[in-house]
Image (cartoon, rainbow, N blue to C red; front, side, top):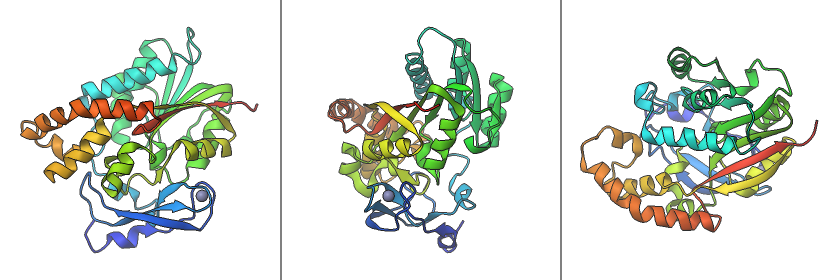
Length: 313
Ligand SMILES: [Zn+2]
């Protein structure tokens, strides 16, 4: 993709939550993570306050903005950070129907590290993932059952699952309400959807604006807040029981690294394993921990973790 042809790959969209065509531009974002071309206006819906990219890459063009380095696949993906995330997610899931084996679908499961831990803990697990190389890894190395595609095409019966997890996926999807409706149909009555998304109303989003790491333009198409997450889940016929604010530091640290080094971002940083980049990120991490803990305490965490339940039959 060149500087010349990215613009032809964009489409305009009404609000993905309420279909309104009325919105105000907040700022214009660029791809600071991978450095691919394009300028992407971020707008706020005048009707429902949802923040989204508009215009945005068309569904056909989206893969052009997902280079192979974006989601590392293979043994290299099993970083201490990824293992901590997977184990943290399992411990949350196990609070839902504690003490019994659950049927779990992980949407956008990647290579399936979380599912591997969940299976080893005695649960029945299934994954669905768009990346064929991630699917192959999960099947061949972990021996998991993973379908290739999106949750819309997954071949499971309706009302068959206790828990669906979707970790930092919803912000990538062009039609989040349709995805949530499909999830509601797959859950048993009383079943739980647990998902995480970046929080556009967070302290770090306010501090960094168009330079916020978790904007991740143009791969993040929608930017949720507690309020708009509640609206989206309600539109799909589920009820939010709890929203937790994450005290994770990645968003703050990598936003700041972008400003300080110009090299910015996490993916670039990976290419300089032995450089001072990581020492600096480590140093920033110490005060960042305190700031993020306070932000989460006051309901301004960099990401939110949403527990929603299917209440209707
Ligand atoms: Zn709207």
